[in-house]
Amino acid sequence: MRGRSFDAVFVYAVSPIMAAIPALVIGRLKKAPVFIWVLDLWPDTLKAVGVLKQPALLSMVGRMVSWIYNRADYLLLQSNGFFDNVRGYCTRPMDPRRLIYFPSWAEDDFSAAPNHLTSILARDESVFTVVFAGNLGEAQDFPAVLDAAEQLRGKVAVRWAIVGDGRMSQWLSQQVSKRGLDNVLLLGRHPLDAMPALFANADALLVSLKTNDVFEKTIPGKVQAYLASGKPLLGMINGEAARVIDESGAGFTCASGDADGLARITQALAAITPPLRKVMGESGREYYLQHYSKQRLLTRLEDIFRKATLRKVNH
Image 1 (cartoon, rainbow, N blue to C red):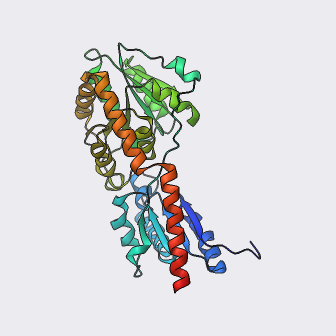
Image 2: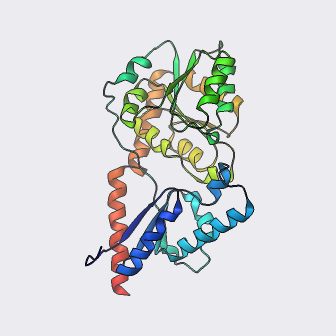
Image 3: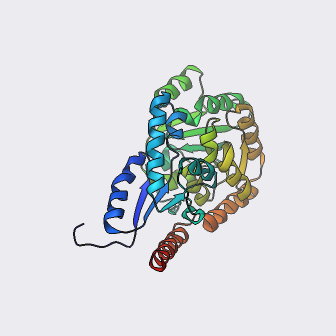
């Protein structure tokens, strides 16, 4: 670092938020503006997922978040739902221009190159295939997902393919076996580059989150990837993510935790003709290109840096 100058310092602020502290120090030493891309709402997310429950510890983390936010020059917010929460932790006056909406993108690689998952989840036109890919945690509300799968078993030809691992993996395996859910496939963890081929053999992609004020404000990263894939979406989810799915025309949504609703919208999507489902997927793909394209967002980020640098020079 010695002898080097910087135009800006950028922090990719997934958990933990403390990663921003060295960046603030460097920004101060180099007299460069610090940009923090806020992707998780600390400490609220910690409370929501049950990692931190003690009020005293939550208060301490909250004070640390305020300290960090107050010293950043710019806060880039992953979701429009973040603004009120972040303002609440900015205890010092902050120029509104320094709170900027800047969403996540997804890697746009959906050429469906052949891989081992293709044979595991072979295309079957006689069954409607719903794929969930990602973290298998408590927040994803798999009890409600399995309830929906159980409701449709024997009534509608639907199979549910769950890809990933996490704290709920063992519970899922036990429940699928105990309840005899032969329409649920647990495919385990696979690399990101396996997803395009997997998605290609799906009829719909599922995103789900439990009911929680924090979850309603965020947009899970899988939503952008799902939209980019050009496949229809099923969302058992509230808030910003539901708004994006509905606004894009890419799929159907129901309330978080609503197993009956998930069964209903899954059955409704399965009843739609393949050409119409293709139109829905293409609508989602177009929405992705307009709002979450990596190249478009990187160009915008460069513009944000440029304007901030000019503002610094002019002051």
